[in-house]
Image (cartoon, rainbow, N blue to C red):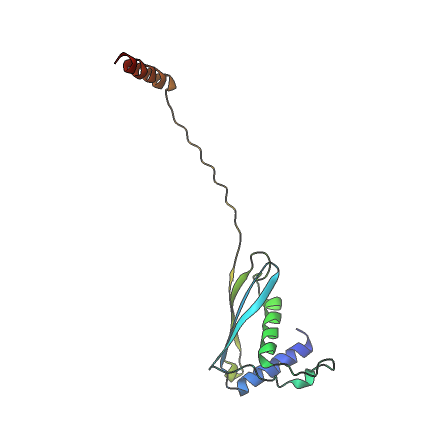
Amino acid sequence: MDEIENKKANYMWAQLKELGVKELIISFEGSGDDGQIDDIIAEPKTDLRVNFMAYQYETKQSRQRERLDHRIQDWAYDYLDTTCVEDWVNNEGGYGQIKIYDIDTQKLNIEVEITSRYMSEEDNDYQEYRETNFDQFMIEAKQAAKAKENA
């Protein structure tokens, strides 16, 4: 994260604290070189679809203010890209949650739970050895056929 993104993140945490949010749970999922944030839940339940307070970062091309939920989503993508050990978007991908606690205490506790999907291939060979006397079976079959003819 660059300096501006760090400042935006600090404003984001400050705004969440001001709104009374103590915890965020951000769900994500990805595969095939793509990923998305599925859900953002605030505890206590808070509407995050409000204007992001750090409007001084709005660009001249866009006079529209950024929403707080979009800022959280952007932060989550950056966080996953820069800190997540597991690969959550490539190949079979993965899914999980980012849990942020203690927002109200100004000492963020961030946990990432991720389940990675892997395709596996397994080769199984089966070999069996049976000792059989085929000659004896042929003799018995011929005797049974001859007995049937004579009956």
